[in-house]
Length: 487
Image (cartoon, rainbow, N blue to C red; front, side, top):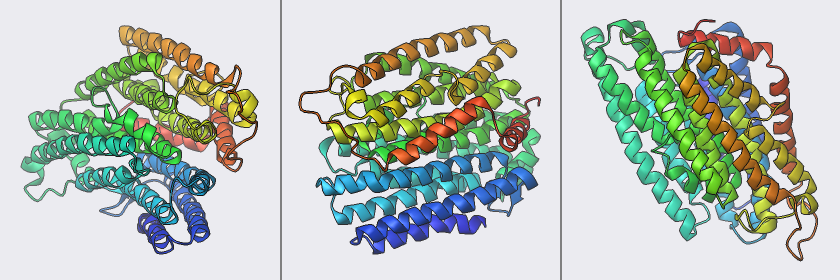
């Protein structure tokens, strides 16, 4: 089933490429393919959550991988669903040609394929190749509109992330070197093989390897100060792609970091070294995001800096460690993905209506786009940690984890910066939603069909804010145990 899951998005991509002149057929194939991917992925996730690990040598899916797979297939399906009316509007308004539309869906499914490959691979070398693959494929989507700003963002994304991925490769080589004395020169770099001898790995090589991996993959995560590509890429890509970049890709890169963090935790070094680095980069990311959110003038860049904030929160949670820190960070990965996808879908609706990304250029959303404005306001309240939404729950868990582990000063800094970000972010959104709309702006939703995935996401973050399903909660507890946290 894992092989089928890997090949399915590739097959759909080929179908979209072959049918790229037939828009409706491409749209139909995309929705059907995304639906099948969601179905197959969900079956695998449920199997792992209920029955346990799938280990097929090269392919490996434990609770952590299955949790990530759930995020990929769910956001992937909703992004495709939103893409159909969104890109159809772009096509009708002359922004993209029929051929470009076919290529859009082709690369979108290849993007999903590379992210699926990241989380089902047992081999850390294959994980590196897959993460690099996400960069190469998604760079086309970042520069999709072929304008000066989008092409500049795509090149910046390629250059910075390629440097980062080179450091990650060097880190992977050091981790391989740490295992030679134990596994010999024929070490296969399988994560399961390394975990079996984690206590015997060379600590010096392992430390150097983790630092390089954290900086390398951390560049793709968007951790400061390696974050500079992210605001440009997320703001220039089509909104459904921005949702995938922010809600899924960043988590895939964090997943790669976490595999090495788990290895460090079970080695003779212990988890303090890697946890300290994660906490440091997390707090730095939160601080930089807060500064740029306060002064932001572009609402898509605002959402991008919010992504840097939340990846920082996730890093902080794993840095705090303990049950609540790790459980909260894992839950936050899911909550942020759902909420940020909702916000980027809403931003897409606003952009198509107002034809500007400027915060000052958008006023009176409650009058011109009443449904979008309500959903956007709910998303803004959710992403800033307001109850009863799910982000509030995971942010409080992370704070609890910090206090529980005795990290009082970092916990206070974390709480203080979240409050500042709440005030700044909501200040921008409130100005956009209320007030008088621009003269001549008519009332009406541009993308009514696009409201469906937005409503689905609101339901998810509301439900997750009230209670966590038992199956997911049990799986998260199993993942916490994998990190060595007390359950």
